[in-house]
Image (cartoon, rainbow, N blue to C red; front, side, top):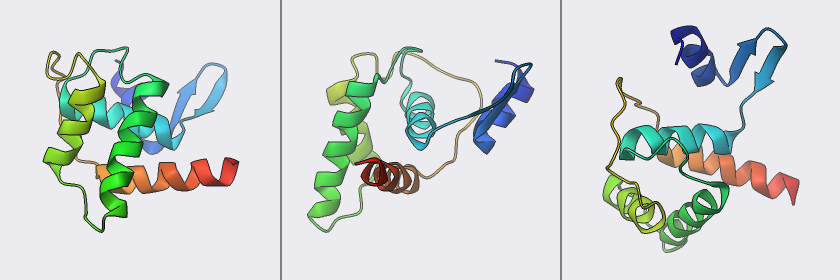
Amino acid sequence: MDPVIAYGHYLGNITSLMGVVTVTEDEKLAHSLKLKFGLAPYEPTAVQLARIKVAIQCIRDRGRSPTHADWGSAVRENCPSAGSFGYSGVDNSDLNTLLAIALQNSKKKS
């Protein structure tokens, strides 16, 4: 991926010749999961991401803050390619924060 496009992706926008494309919170979460857990380029799908979010929300509903191991378990249960791919660079975004924002935006749409 072009470094300029990748940088724009982390800022929440991708600049193209056609203008600015907004990246949703779910897309940011999916991208972070892909990097952190070595997912295939086509994962997580929308359905897989929804299942991962439900699994993590269940942990939060029990009063616990999800750990990296919790995230890994949820991803491995839903994404067969987990651990099969490697991406250069490190994504240090906080998955719990991204999930909270994605859930908040989902509630607004409902």
